[in-house]
Length: 393
Ligand SMILES: *Cc1c(COP(=O)(O)O)cnc(C)c1O
Image (cartoon, rainbow, N blue to C red; front, side, top):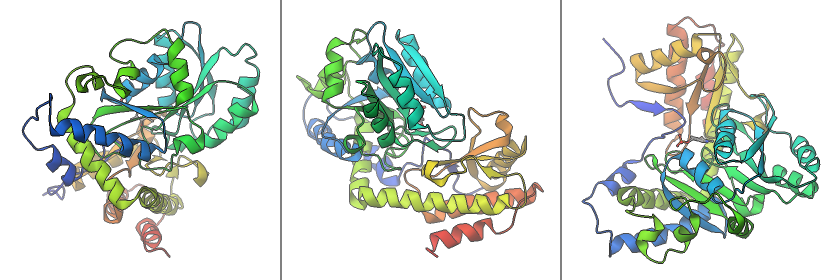
């Protein structure tokens, strides 16, 4: 006998749950790529994408994942001899830094550990000591999915300005876009990137790069740009095919159209508020469980926690045991411990995108059952604490 038969729930931090509406929008015959509805529909995505990122700048769409967005953004900015300053609060910052290195730039890493947000004062110091202004950009991950650290992007912009440094602020919003409040222009980011499969609720396959005039100016002196990644023809396409440097990702675009419509219908403020409340429910449960065992939220400070993903530490081995139990015995797949040692002590809950109260309560109830089934010591009342948050009490 197993209790896992029924609808499986993938509660990992991306790919996230794809709404049935998005799947239905993608379920169609191949459209004509040379003329017709596809063109109008695709051009119509652009204002909505700019609204989701909070910018009056441009947006380029690529066929690719988040790694593609990393490369696309740097490909249009970097010049021989550039440095990039990278605040490290998890493994994804290091991944982006490695792409910069592969493109010939020298990453300057500032390490903030794996359980705290970046300290803007240290970023300011690092920029002040760069008298020759070799640092072209600060590569800042808004929410690092491996640790669930959320960095304060507006404060990082303020640090750049306080140092009087011309560096661009480039924001990895792959985990945060459509989950945590991010307003590119208001926060002072020059470039923002994301991918389709997290807060944007569309299958993996689309990458996005937004950029403002300062970044567009940097593009004019960049010497790493290659045809596929060049953002210029993508944002001012002479013809539709130039927008994707070849065949458009037809079905993904229809799926994205539906996802953006859903975000618009709910309202971006409400989308952010939903994520914030569901995240607080998760934190409340873990705090209750941690009263009687080794389970802990990775982030002590709520202001530094993502609203899209939560990283949780347990005793060594227990993260793996718990994940195996919830998946095979109850039909819920939790995220692996990523970039932390020992990985078997960690797991992550994705609560991003098409997620509502009952889904979060189900995941937390399943974890509670797993803790009991595996005799992992834990405090009582985790689900009760989450329900209290959901109830608004
Ligand atoms: C998921 C993620 C990435 C990597 O995206 P892929 O689509 O897996 O290439 C990079 N940065 C952050 C913050 C992410 O959450």
